[in-house]
Image 1 (spheres, one colour):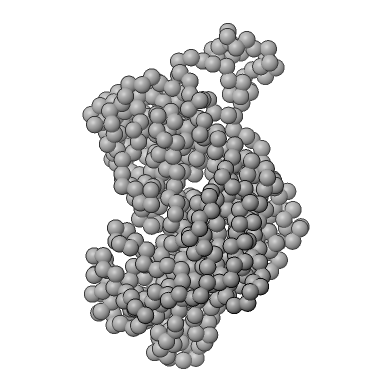
Image 2: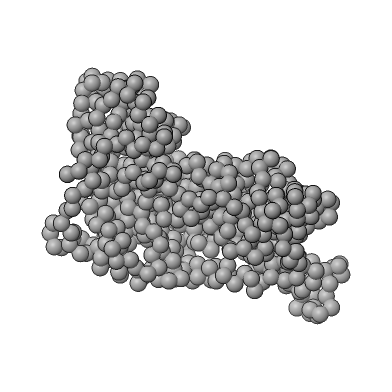
Length: 345
Length: 243
């Protein structure tokens, strides 16, 4: 057995997985990774099930040291500088730490959460099928609390599998899509329009329970108290002060404020990875479109293994190219066989 | 119950959940229909349904849109919800000890003053109540009770407290509550119970279920301390009354 020891880690970093389902009727919320696609990508890179437990690293830096043997890991999610003894490690790749080596992650450059998956997974005692940390309920394993320097995971020795990378679709920069409801009838048309047409920013006081939105005050038709009813990941409730809160994975299972809209499943992770202070907009979509997107999102996650590539071949990735804005006009004329990243102007 | 129950409203809660709303207000009949639909779904599961969450007035149904679409699920839910209510079955009843007032119920005296009576009278009215667990929500084990004496109904605190103790027994609006974990609350704190409605590694992990009946009885603070230690060690403490 090897160990992966946390040499340093910032706040808001916890063990998370696909979440804890089946006990919301008892007030136990789902928790789980804020960005499920990145969770699944990191796990896929090291051959784990997509929703296995990983380290969800918050916006600050962290470093992980292999002890008593090699440890194979992968990173995906909010981009950051990463290196092993000064040798850079790219996002969305797997890498094997030799015994004694340390992987160092910098601050998130955009977004908040980066996922560190460990080959063979994190060992712990699941509750309702999950190791996810829910600090308020004292749940999570092996550490039912935010991670600290000195915490460690006992892991199987690295398999020696080659380093891989995963080609993810270019993240959309479009609006965060919502379905209106369940309580959009608690708002008049002008206030619904105000919600949909305004620019919003995520407040720095946001956390895994909820993202507070800064923008115009949204007024209710009949006041802000409704009889408590159930919440979901992405419910956008509007409390008395008119400042909406998007409920995230550690939300209360019920709430007593009207919910004007709900972020579609495919976009909850994008909202989670929107940095505090970055302006964004919402866009209302139909149920048919939202469910179609949810099915595509589930399929994308199921088919992630098809997106694995050897880390030492540089295949053409037009999405990444246009994202990095290095190719511009030349993209359509590129000869995929000869084009090299190193040849960029 | 009349044969022509008004159909509930189906409110989309995103692409993977639907709120089946029976009433906009706290209403015992609506809650009965919520719990009946919840039971009906448990008895004859719909493929693609992943979890249901009863509340006072609505049932939140989580589902996988890869397995069933909104329209198809909605039809099935409406059909089930239109069924006449099954005859009431004997509910479980819990007798729950409470240490009222003092450090355990810091609002008891203020509530008495506001209602122009004595703390003892407030306690007497609170223990006289016959409550029903209408829903469990917000944090693990937090049991929302219907059946609060009308004379004890008062609006919530202007300034919610950021932290109230585990085991808090409180009232807010027309609701009464058993709170399991320390949590923020805007309700009035009457006392504390040693009973854990949620305790990991105990069988059962969750003590109360929506639909259970609850009555309270007063214990002195010394008894509370003893029971609290026993509860910490895994004892249930609450007395289950077999009807």
